[in-house]
Image 1 (cartoon, rainbow, N blue to C red):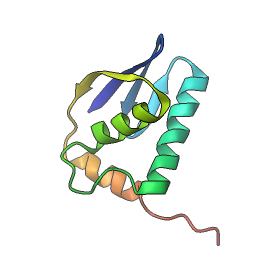
Image 2: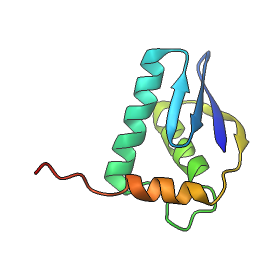
Image 3: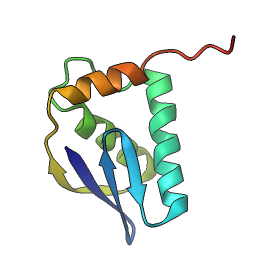
Image 4: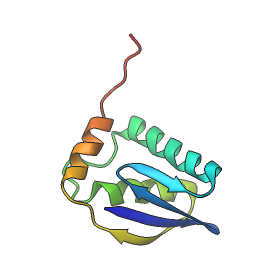
Length: 91
């Protein structure tokens, strides 16, 4: 469902593959890091039981921070991340 993280004294929520934070700079950093990670690695494994947590964990590891609260996602999140794995071609 969602993941609440702490980065320094700021908090952010990761839900349905999008970061929300009261600090626009932190929100942009988290969303860009998520997109670049998905483009570089394909995102969480297709058979991962909670891909949202896996993605949040990887992004937080990269930017420095900690997961404070995690509410497990349902199976439909697998479809969400699968669609984001697709390559985008410029033609």
